[in-house]
Image (cartoon, rainbow, N blue to C red; front, side, top):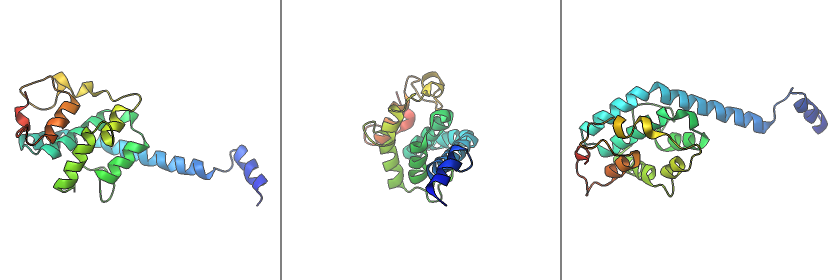
Length: 172
């Protein structure tokens, strides 16, 4: 088959380019992850609250972030999917409310969420349109704290600061 035949078929919609096939497959993977996040929204919040009550700061920060992403799933893109697949939902890459991360992996992930200059935090703050965390922040913060005026990144920062804030339940 000649290149001209391929071009003619593509222009008539009879054949898909390899780039289009790859883009379609990536879109399907992203849609599957978004659907998985939506299905697990309530579980992420339950797990975050359980970890909060147990003062398991890294697990709480991760599930709270997953909850925030599930609420803002309409603006997720392929970069978020790849990050979550490679760093959160390992080894199989499927969305699940069960984490198989060890403590050092959890710490590194929370560091990446909080770091707004690089990593996951950078992706969050530089995403256009930006995430609307108003559904989970301030008055609607999902944890019983002494302060209702704490933001998403404030909370993730508290989860990171083991020395400064030994108990995340005492956020003032």
